[in-house]
Length: 160
Image (cartoon, rainbow, N blue to C red; front, side):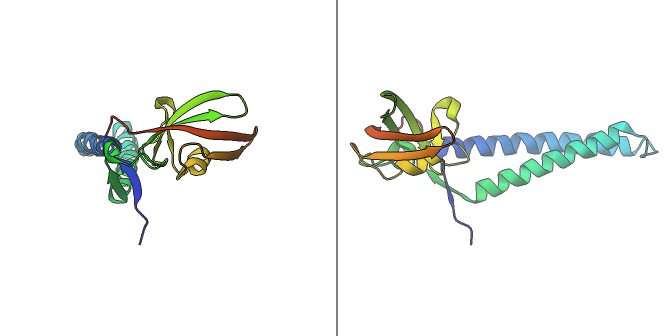
């Protein structure tokens, strides 16, 4: 059996919305391919060839989304405990190398996005701080060297 992958309710809903959008788009492409097929010679029918390629891409992505949805364990990030850095919490770290503060929300691989301040619990930093409490320290090896962090804050998310 496959392990379930944690995902926020917001991330889960985004996957469902993308799947729904792609299913509608695939139905439109199928109609265009059917119409192009009726035009005759398929070997030189660009609309038919392109439509089949586009349909293959759409069906592949829909399959990926269905797999992610079926293997997801939905977690409401507003209801997680904040005594430790766990999935859904917002963790503030002090980089002991530079004395800079950084804040991340710990999420799963399907909804983590560094541009919005969230990292995967399976990323090197996420893995190192997962399960830590206030005041705990962690080290992370990366290509630029070793980073040392101290957990200085753990808060609940306002987003599901």
